[in-house]
Length: 337
Image (cartoon, rainbow, N blue to C red):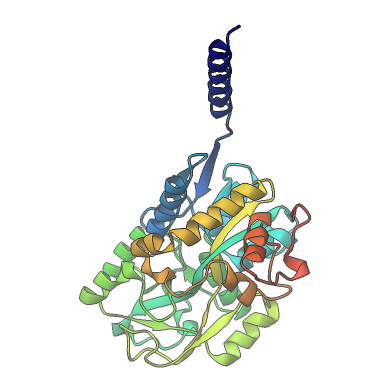
């Protein structure tokens, strides 16, 4: 065989090999749990999926509407979701340990993936009723949140811990808003940025004036005796920009973000986090409430022993890569340096 023919054969063999490698390159098709499409947080979920899909050819994320945190966790456990957003750390910890909402059914495979922000599970009430305290909602029609969501579950549990007999009306946000406008309920719970109203309630507030109520220090102490993993913030008077007369009081305020299963490969989790960080500004355009929060560092900053779960192996890899010291308790057994 001549030298020229040998080169051509080698070239076409190499091309065939490349085509074969590309043809058999693994593509990860991932279902991502989100929340109700009526929630303003849904925009954050869609933007996150878009950021990942733009960044990689070997990861394809499909956004699946859901009932938020508790629903996402159950469907993650059941294999319907590969990872899920709009999940709070206390709920994930309950699943990990098999307590409260997941009593008797611990699932040790749940892993923390990234932080969205710290939010207030805020209680909005009709201003005209002059309700001053969470306890004054006893017996009145009140929507604690979306059925299956962690925030609705917390509202119910906190009321129970305080010995209150509530008239709960769980509903989707869209339905709850309509009920509030018609004054068929007097209050609703909606997760909100720490210093402002939920965007979903701003228009409502214009036509149906609202205010916010919270808990007293004594009530918080009673609640935490029963549920020590719940965290609270003190909201000063004027701490909510659109409601200068609301406060001071305490509000339940969890870390919220994304979780995955330990079955999600380390390299895939790493890529998801890397895409989120790289395209953070794009995601923030869809949901500005994430501005000022660090999706990686804030987990290791705010997660407290006893109220946390292991980090995903991909998060540990990324954190170590940028110089974060990862506590041993947060490193999962499947992590590979």
